Amino acid sequence: MGVLQEKPRRLGGGQTRCPHCGLLQDRVATLEQDWVLLEPDMHPLAHTVPAEHRWIELSDGRVTVYGVCPPDQFQRCRIEHRLACPAQPLPDLWPWLTSLRGENARQAERRDDPKPPLPPEEWPDAG
Image (cartoon, rainbow, N blue to C red):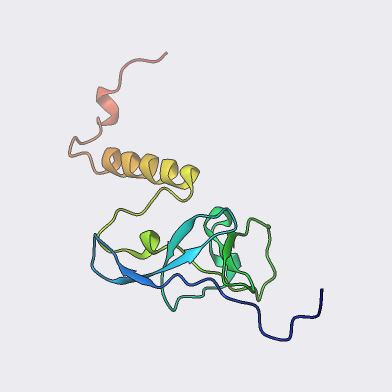
């Protein structure tokens, strides 16, 4: 075996149109011999993306989920197109935050309830 004199071969994936919104998405091979559809030309800082949604590009062109917490502050990653697709609902990225938002919505509804509070003289005897 000799030393490789050329750059590593990159796996070709190409681009396809999203069936939901019609925008382009990058088709990229994963380490698991599968494909993922990523948002083109989008490389956010990894620490701004939830760990299970960070796709890191490897030297051969494949990507893998990068769940290291916290990531290097300068590390860039890719995100799936479905997270940015305007025609698809946003997935529940933080279940606890979704629960908190639901509870806050219920509290706001109760607070805006049109029934006025009972005046003090109509309060039941608690004594």
